[in-house]
Image (tube, rainbow, N blue to C red):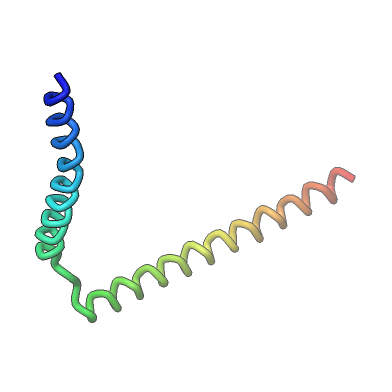
Length: 79
C-alpha cells in the first residue's frame, strides 16, 4: 500500500516536468513555422491602418458637428 502511494507520487512529481518540457519543444517547433511579413508589407499595412483611422475620425468629427448644430437649432427654436 505504501509502495503504491510512493510510486504514484513519484509519477505525479515527474509528469509536470515532462509536460512542461514537451510544451517548450512544441512551442519551439511552432515558432519555426511562423512566416514573418516583409518590411515593405508591414509599412504598407501600417499606412492602411493609419489612413483608415483618420478617415473614421474625420467621419465621426463631421457627424459630431452636424448633430451638435442640429441640437443647437432645435434648442434655439424651442426656447
